[in-house]
Image 1 (tube, one colour):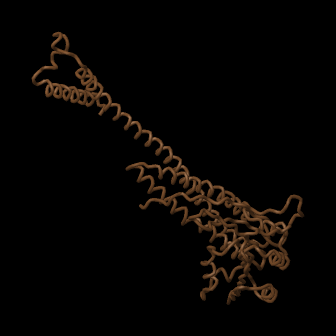
Image 2 (cartoon, rainbow, N blue to C red):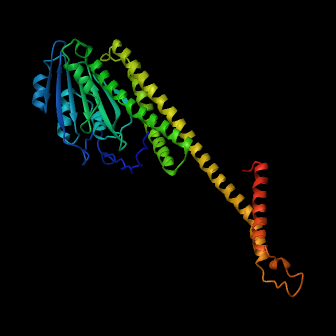
Image 3 (cartoon, rainbow, N blue to C red):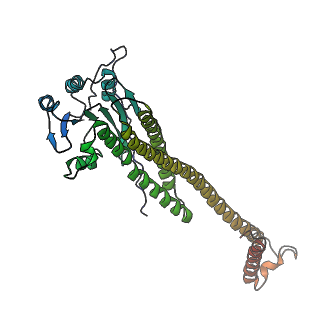
Amino acid sequence: MAKAEAVKKREPVKTRRPPVGASPGTLIADPSARRSELRLTLISPQKFKTIENASIDDLNTHCDKWPVIWLDCTGLANIPLIEEIGRIFSLHPLALEDVVNTGQRPKVDFFEDHAFVVVRMIDDVTSHRYEQIAVFFGRNFVVTFQEREGDPFNPVRKRIESSAPNRLRARGADYLAYALIDAIVDSYFPPIEAAGDMVDGIEDEMLHSTHKQQMRQLHELRRDANVLKGVLWPMRDALATLIRNDVPYVKAETKIFLNDTLDHSLRLIELVETQRDMLTGLIEMHLSLSQARTNDVISYLTIVSVIFMPLTFLVGVWGMNFDPESSPWNMPELKAYYGYPEALLFMALVAFGLIGFFKWKKWL
């Protein structure tokens, strides 16, 4: 497996909020918000119609003529447009405030004639960027707000556009909302499974050799797992709340499908928890292997030092400037005819003798 990419520096996430003391429901656009664009999908059991770059006039014209309408707003820069959408569908102003103030925790709020669901989607895996998607739905409408282009809704759109009869056109707005939420939850599987493959690859590499880059990759993956855990747990709670509450615009048969989405979210949480435990274990294993490698190096250096210590002693003794002619006690072996080869042979015997001793003790 190819080595993972180097850790990239993350940009801090900044959330635009109303000033302190502002009236509840005050909408203030983020200066970095994208330009707002509307896509209107009109749905009936027999047919459908999609209007790209729709306007409020298109919405007013078709709003009461189709059993189900889906309005998708991409970009949150146009505050008057968002307020007008809220007026047409009677959306609660506090919910609209949460739409504009991105970075909300996944949740579900119920109002008299509609529900408000906040979920988070992995927008860009490489840059670790998440995007908030807000979903409103009532008896005959679904309104979604996205921060920017790009979403996992293409399979849902293809099912709506299919010529074959399908549940998305035959059932109501609550089923369409379920399909959109289910697509968001299922979009977490590919990046989480890819992260699992990366963890397995790093583990295989570590069994052969360890290096500093692996530790950086492991810390990065564990940080991603912690972020995913912080997103998936409240998403699970939101889905459970959506299933438990008895509101007239969420049918009992739709709750059966929402239960399946809840199961998917629980499986995602289990995958993330397992990966997080594996990453914690791999980090500890990396530290242990690195420490063991350091100990091995120190052991070999110590053995080499011990071998050379007596040799250094002998060389130091024979290197002293004694005069054997002045006294028979002044190192007479300095004038031995084979003194040099005999000294080398003796030192070699000492070195090999120490190596044999270390092997006998199983230190080598």
